[in-house]
Image (cartoon, rainbow, N blue to C red; front, side, top):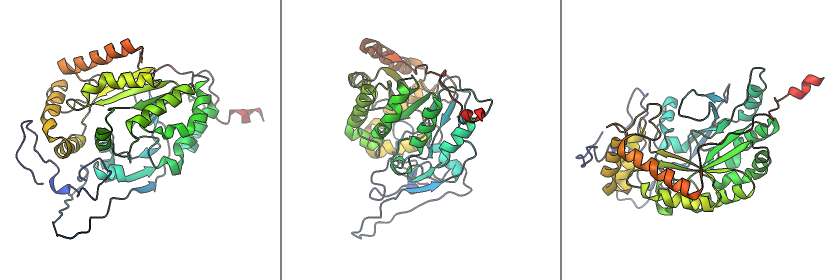
Length: 371
């Protein structure tokens, strides 16, 4: 690994070194490198020489691979997450959000949390069938299913694969509550399903909006729709009767934190009625990936960003403890929370996820018991 002298933050100015990939090859991608996954027995290093050739390197192509699953509903018992079950139709995410806390999961597949995470996508084509089977089990009890908690259910590959829509069709037919988290206006494709479910208080749509700046958004989450398209999606969902939450997430110290009030005002004007927010998290390899991203795009802001994060994380870059991992602690984290509360109250927002209806649930296949 190659490193150059530390900057004033104490973090090496280049952490990923020779695993970096030329800019032309990764145009439209979020990560600056493709470091070896932490579970691999050997480290992969890629060196690029200046050859003087006029030809640019070939762009990195997205590879899509189906995988077979035996179950689709993931369970959790975390005390600081307002749901106990979730579905992610895809592994990896082509949106390429540099800050995505799900990036380290690609290491379990023998792949890199860097560029592999956003270019090696795995689909779950059996998701709808598995969901119907799991909900049909005699002991199943309905609670809100969170759709898209790790990777975006409306990332670009959903246009062709339509796995998310198939899952929603099963949930609609079963009258099962669902919350959706996305950055994409592709959610409007399924407005027919969502509006019908909203009439029975069965759905909440959360749109993530960490910045209103289109140039910054293009660097932060390069293949996600622009901020104005996300706002337009909020307006269309709300107009159709679908309750909308704006997720001001992640809040990045020294980079996006000055936008909190502006984001909330715009979201409210476009129909959002609830707020969620989270401070930037840096689990596993995400810390190095974000550090290198800052070094390439905003080197002058990196030291302050990491200093404020350490202040909010008890002196560490990441604090995985329940109750602390999303909001942080200390003066800076308290100030961020207060700004969200004050602006949200002034604008008439409700806070957190809403209770959805479980009373209409119809177990898949239950009607066959009549015969």
